[in-house]
Length: 237
Image: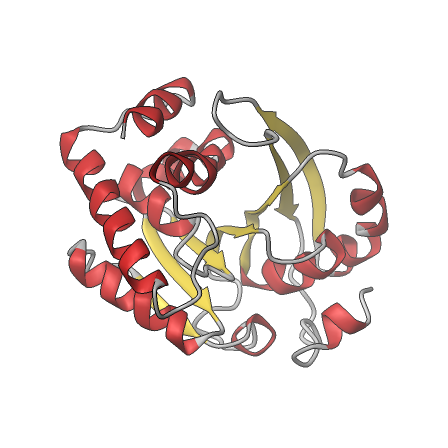
């Protein structure tokens, strides 16, 4: 895990031996499960370190210090647990919930949290459009993160309803996002958000760089949002 350890240090994240062993274990289980569950197309040991684990840890660049110690973080469209599980490994005091619509993938996430002995990580199976209306989840999170889920105009509707007022939604994006940001302004405002910053995180080994769009939740999302499953992607605001 040399690439991960060095890259994490560049981000200001120190990983000890126990944490690096947890990442090794994560890699092994990911590859084993990937033989029968479509979790990732990236399986090379070094590329998983950089394109999955290290890329997930770039989110740390915009996390408030208080969140790292005791905050609640939701990962929407978690898939193989990215970026939520790497962030939980890096910050043991972080309270993490992983939300994923595909039951086979949440089966892997449940298995992975058992293997890592993460008893405090919650797994939710279902669509964000539906679960965002659950009063146990709506408006309950300090930070909501998402990685390669949808365009920002759609993603805003899928993530911001979960945020507390004063909380953040962080979308991991690639380069050249100006047009996407522009088309998302109506959706972001409708969800009670405002773009706080766009951060270009430069870390050697992260493919194509990492852009983090940070949206602050400034007002409560009105009850009608998000709309029914599939509608946000078919008819973005």
